Image (cartoon, rainbow, N blue to C red; front, side):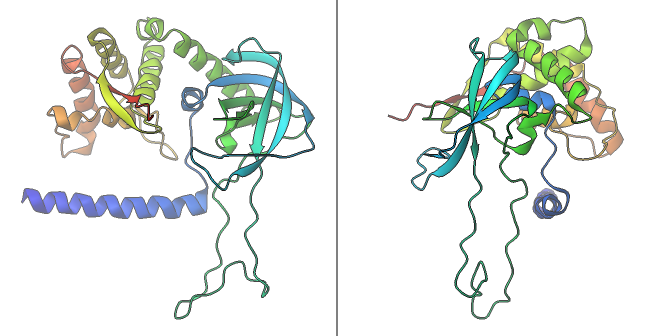
Length: 297
């Protein structure tokens, strides 16, 4: 019976993955909450694009990228540094120029394969973001691996000042940056939402590996505060719209609680309270593990 159930869950997972990929083609990229964008960034600034270099810079797009890509480099005058920036008044931001698909002489971007129907390739779900001179923006930046400029990971890393959600997103980004500057203060805050947001950001940070890494336990004190902070989240809140990686239920499974004995109730309505109880019961017992990069020499 158990094997049948596991097989069924695996099939459901595969179908869900396929459906998610198809949904991305239709509805666009997965929603990335502002606090998570802050967590993924090295530097967060509000500024104005004041210049653009005429010559493109050829540089690796990722580690060991032999082909490389071309970046258009912009100068951004920093009006407010929410996180990082090192006190700079101006920063250089490189925007990856989209590569044009090769077009053969017959005009079709991809020649058909014999015996298979021709399927015209679709454009990327989310093209690389590109700045414009004169733009006033909120930027979530990462340093380029080898060049002296910052880069943007996705379109949502650029929020125009003219956007209707700019003010609200700026407030969220400011709050998240403040929490990450002093996470222990956030975990001990009297405000339950601040405790949850800080704990959720730390879990995402610790449980995200960007390359070769090993696992290490965080301190018992921090681990306890993180679980207590997560328990302050609203596990009864109904899901609205797209998948939210900052939702309490999504963060909960980043802990891999099944390995520590958590068994979700079959009744869906009981799952949220069960997660909350598990966090409260295990706050002083469970040790959160974080990914630590391995230096490859």
